[in-house]
Amino acid sequence: MPSQSSTTHHDPFSPEHIRATWSGTASVEDAAQAFGLSRSKSYDLVRRGEFPCRVLPIGRTTRVVTASLLRVLESGEPEYNTASSASTKAS
Image 1 (cartoon, rainbow, N blue to C red):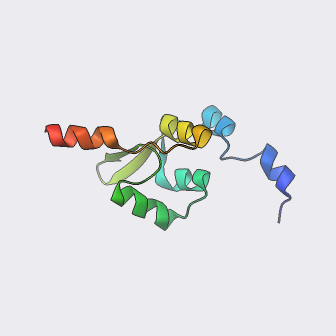
Image 2: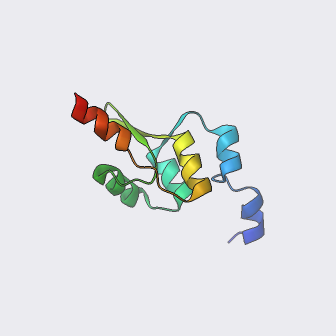
Image 3: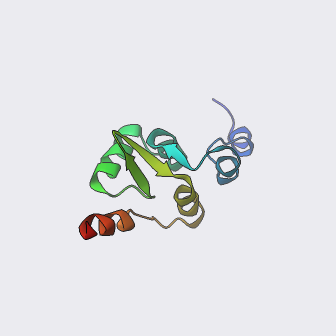
């Protein structure tokens, strides 16, 4: 098992690394790892509209908005999909 100090400096899910290497959207699986959640728990939260950051349903896939994920990681405050709910009601 790697030591805690070695993972801190090279954490692939740190906000700095995410900002430098991820594109505008990410997979639910990658976002789940960044939050320390399991894949199944993350998809359950997405289905219930309770995933801690904004998600975009695109066809049969769901993508996580990287900027939203970073805001949540840095602030600790969840950012749910309230905008998508409002646009659905307006249609």
